[in-house]
Length: 243
Image 1 (cartoon, rainbow, N blue to C red):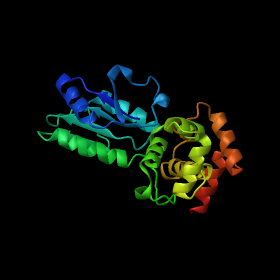
Image 2 (image 1 turned 90 degrees about the horizontal axis):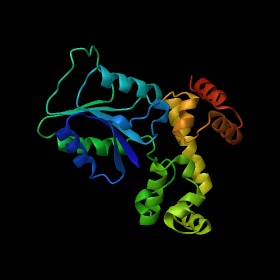
Image 3 (image 1 turned 90 degrees about the vertical axis):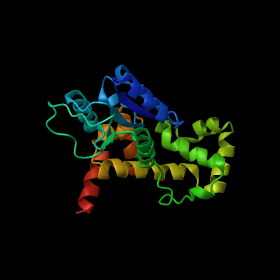
Image 4 (image 1 turned 120 degrees about the horizontal axis):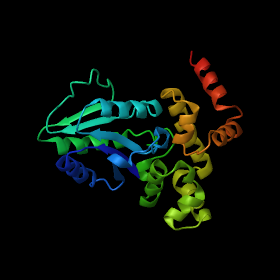
């Protein structure tokens, strides 16, 4: 399930946003007072912050979020562009201005684009998966992996999701993909870690939270067990090799 943070104080505009986003079954809106008290509690599947005012408060909220997720989008949604005089500088990246009579249509197109570019989307070809040839049930599995808590992306939770036994799920996954599920998920985890550490440049504590770990120590132990080195040593080595 994806989430959208809505900071909109105009009832009519908020209803418009609900109307557009209701077309996406996998999206729910968290409005105003329901925002996380601490940015580290921000859901890893939150898509963007949408607001009907570009003022210091909105910019401050975005800045706090981007300390945790540098590419987090801000969507301005209103009848026309209204900039608070106190705002001296707008974000240079991932700021989307949705204004005018066709704003609902443009918002829908933007949401589709943001979902398709979300960091949890799997690079199927890179992972050796021909998505178009998968059965409907296996496509549901891939969508589950892209949206569920990563700690619940194991054989037992997915088998429960499909209402089948874990052994049968392992069997049909291997039959359809040609890969053992545990090996596949290891490749998925490696992809996410490379993306978040090397492309996004996130700190270890933030990667840990985005991958569903409540304790940094637990993630560090898991990482070292899998790769034989700490996350910090891994990042330093990869950065040195890229020079």
